[in-house]
Amino acid sequence: MSDSLWGVDHDFNMEEVLKEVAYFKGITYYTSQFCGSDDPPPTCIRSNLSYYANLVRSRCEDTLANCSWNGKPFKCCDYFRPMDTELGTCYAINTIQGREINQIKLPMKSNQTTGPGAIKFDVLVTGNVYVLNEEEVPSLTTLGSDVLNVVPEVSHRRSITIRNIENDAGARVISPEKRKCRYHDENFLEVYRHYSYSACTVQCRKEAQLRLCNCTNFFMPGVPERLKCGVDGIMCLNANLNELSVLKAKWSSRPGLYCDCLPSCTEAEISVVKDSKTSTTDDFSTVQIELASLPSERYRRNVVRGILDLVVSTGGTGGLFLGASILSFVELFYIIFLRPFCDVYSQHGEDPWYTKFGTRTLEDNKFTPNPEWAFEKENTGKVKHIKRQFVK
Image (cartoon, rainbow, N blue to C red; front, side):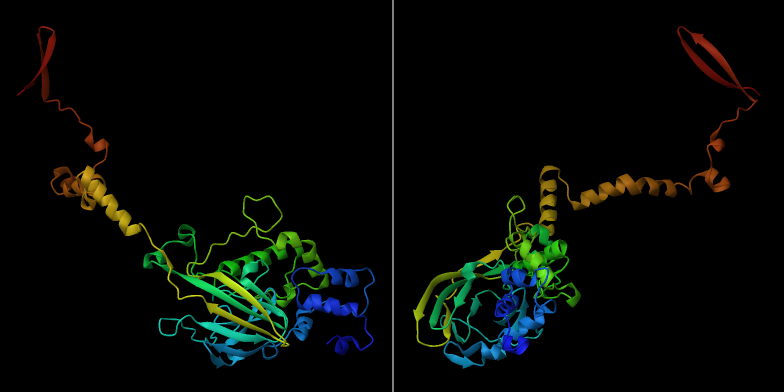
């Protein structure tokens, strides 16, 4: 590829630059040394880095061969479909995060009839195989235990166990912040269509890259071309590698990236039971991933007390200690707030003054003395009695 780009008599250091760009993970040693100087050679790549990366990276047909599930062969590239990641294009099977919306899925069933399932395939190039659930995506911070480094002439066999997670139906009505997890369709991310913890960390890293370098990794999914880094941008990412490539807790003071990401509510937990390697004379690597046994454990997330339970508990406590019920609270509200107004309006028809003059004011209530009335005082001891006498 380098000969077609720069001719036969090209600087071989440019091959290392092209290799760094094609498999970029945040490090730009050769790129900084040869293309970051004040007077870079004219053959240096300056922009449109994803184009040059795709020229070097292998297609699916050149990467995978001889795929089978429980001994039944299938066409590799019909089910291993492209998925955009921050590490470049990967080929994933039965994922919901793929580039295609309606991706064809292989029925990978394991039960008492079929026994533990196993998938087997040949990897024709040097690469990494990520063993993840259908929601997760490969990223810079994927655990090393989830990755197989495959090279020709070495066969890999990995045994795993799976624990699924079930959720109570009432968990849906509780906010993600309270239930401490998110369903994959409760997505707010720009980089992927479905939510997962690893997808959230990719979104977090994208925002940090924009904040620090004003551009993102040119492999970053869901990013317009104008925001993707050129050579100067990826050298900035390299300068901030310690902060961008490591995740840390909120309280930690060490260099790293803090991402406020909730785990997924439904992602399966995959544990490695055993890894084995065998040397061969083949110019490819054979990989077999199998279930060590049928799943026997399952996590379940239950809602201990929902809104209805709270209402029932409140009513039961009130009935036990106060002799009250919900109807009692309704009656109390009626007596305090509604009854006085109802009494006022109901008395309007019995009030002669209201019937004759309408609504009366404060001045209407002042008493005006009648000259035909007279008063006589009688003193009996210390107490004064007032006697009213009508004068004819």
